Length: 182
Image (cartoon, rainbow, N blue to C red):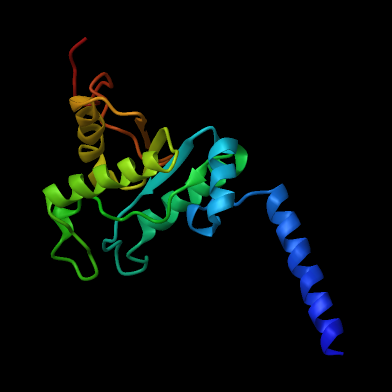
């Protein structure tokens, strides 16, 4: 009986491995080292970094609302066009709400240094096109500045900023409704 259970377990594990080889996870943290190498090839080096925050969202929503939403959007985008999705990243700008319970606010230098180290590590692992998907309005100045600062020195990867589906970047070409000039 014991031998039958081991054979059954081996068959089940073998089937799982075969199925995993056919479809790689898009989640960075779920991939084995060997699968990660294949995932980098399959994604052509495209990796998504869902960028949220931990902050108060009124009395009825979780602190991670922006993080949850942007991670969901990134994972579904990666299902449509294969890319590797970095784990939850909540080290964004939230100084205006740092007095609220549950909000996590890091200093400006640490935010920028951590983001630089993260994208550098992503690139070292084969992510040559890093798309930062922003899910938090407070990052709309931080992220373009970070992207622009990538021009400081040559890098072997490129950073793109994608604002979330329900977020609009500041657009200086967009006419303000209060502007009455022609």
